[in-house]
Length: 176
Image (cartoon, rainbow, N blue to C red):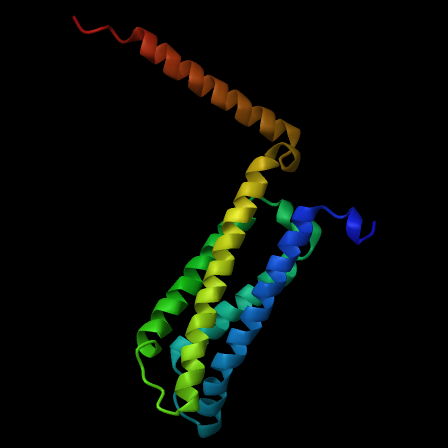
């Protein structure tokens, strides 16, 4: 199976996950500078920077795993994407509050952190796109992704629910 034999959706997801991986590694590098400086000086390591590293590492590992074709067939992938999106938004809010309005005045460390905030936002947006795209993909392909018995079961449940609503509606007396 060559490159052109692959589904366009898989290639699009792979490109998306590549950019998620690159930006996650970028964030790890941007925040690691301060963590390494604190470690070298033997001072307190701020948990905010550790949180940024954890979110970046989780995102990088997830993006790599998502490049494996069968992983995307699981229905829970978009749920994990939502969790990562929320973590990135929290990270953006945390550091955005600290650095967006800060005047760098030639301080390269402040400027680096201001840049990191916008990379955090870009990561959040990529994970939102990933969430919406994988949810749409899963919804449109659920017949193929679910075992046949699960799909038939869900169809029967929907039919029973619809019948129950109609039955209840027929038994309600009309107002006089």
